[in-house]
Length: 86
Image (cartoon, rainbow, N blue to C red; front, side, top):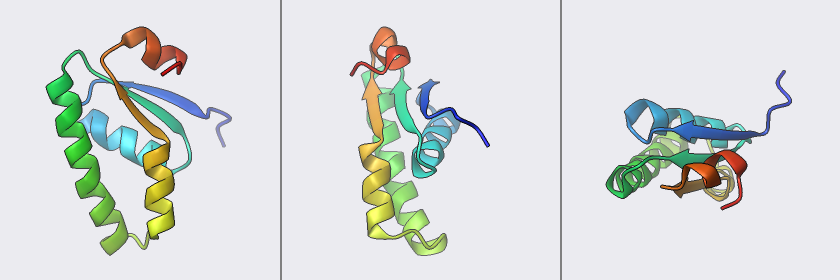
């Protein structure tokens, strides 16, 4: 078991977005970083799709999804992402 509770995901593409969502779902505080605001916007859309999948197929509750969302932040500022000061 890991004591790691804060994660910075560098890159908001498909894989980064999946890692960020699942890490937040599992209780980690996650900062998603990308140099592109458009990439972050696409990542947010993907996260809404993951929320629907987790609800429908993985037995997540509305509360689980709400908690996951609160643990996610999105930023184009690398310093903020890695220091979790966002």
